[in-house]
Length: 254
Image (cartoon, rainbow, N blue to C red; front, side, top):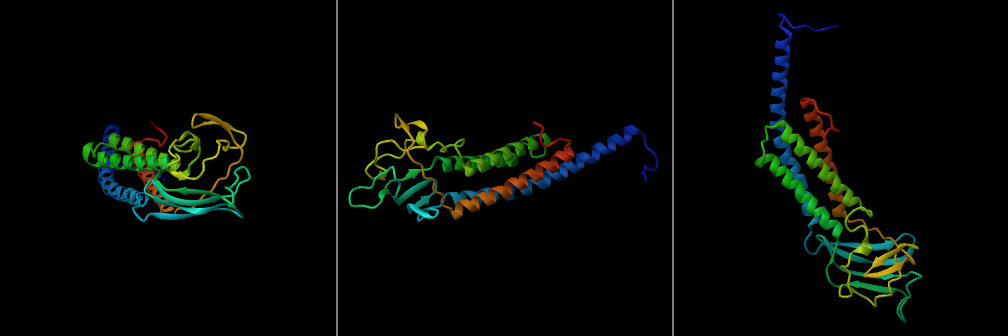
């Protein structure tokens, strides 16, 4: 079954009317997108509010699974740990005489580079949205397409930072020199603790791993940031897909 235009029109006229229809659809889509950008901005602002928790902050219990290797708590305010009390029981770190565990107490703010990077990326997404709304031409399909691509890339980078790992800022903890004696109140051991049998430079000295313990604590606010950020990213990809169809672009095109 086929469809025909009646009365018949020339091929040139048909192409012209198709182009006009696509232009009208693009104009409508770009106008509709402006309302969606306001919603996306609201979602990012909610993420920022959760990340920038003020006093009293979020107090998180620390422990290791099925052992008492690590016990204690830390309190996060914004992108810093402002206090903490931790007890360590590891074979390579003998406790002070008369104590059963090695005490660590955080008394001064301890910056978290990973969260500072996340904060910066979230602010970048707000700038991208503002430029798309106020500074550039919101009726220019190519411009908006480029802005959506930049927005999607920035959100993906923020999600990768939240996931963690050595490839993100703060992932290689031994390269950070923010945890000085004035921050962590405990008799500092000789620098012989790192990642098992791995040699790295820590505080200007080459040190080798003796033992490593990884502790994860679920921060409800940061978990909410991750969920909201994923939802915003999904919405952005949806708009990129719709705009790409109307403009004849593929998602992978640069």
